[in-house]
Image 1: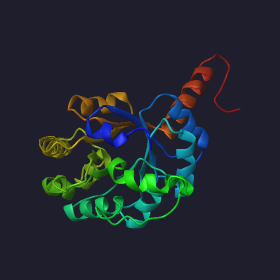
Image 2: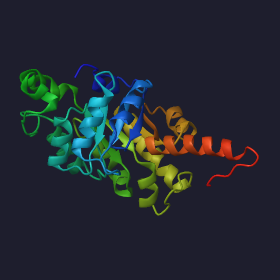
Image 3: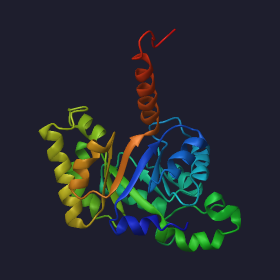
Image 4: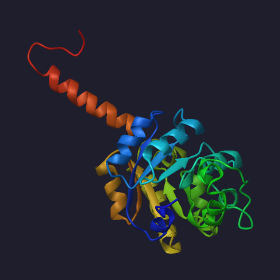
Length: 258
């Protein structure tokens, strides 16, 4: 690891990434080459397994850090994501301080945690084994998601857990948990987001958020959020394809399907 992503995150630099869900190395390579600060490799809401995630990390190359969102905060998923060479993990559905403590423990080698020791891509397949073991606890980023009514209620105790590097708000799951699915502008949802924001900022914890496009993430940037994921590979593809198709079908005498 050479980009010191965690240090930049803790320093509250603005880090703009995008979500990758397609198991195609060309996608990771293309998006990394555009200049995103990081890639959000989503193994929760996509068919990606750890093998496909590793291929995406390899395609992104050494200059574009990748965080892997694991399917759950289980030890085995966290261990696999870090062993394939992720700069950190994003752990969904963290509702309590105890869950947050478990996540941190699984991300850190002893004596700071209980991460299992293996030999994998992160360790240079053994060629950088000792170097990685000595630096991983300092360089691996631990990001948890606050995306439920319970997490909002427990956010003060969650942010007090040592080793949590950032809290990423999941606005869509949060709205659903509050009975306002997809209604991100609803006052109840906005109050919950404000509560998490205020607590994290008071505690000095960097904040992250996802939005479908630039206008969607602008309010978070204005509130001081610094870990930003904007857009998804599949939506980029469909939007560009739809624009091209619409442009052609507007030409007199053509149709969308022959």
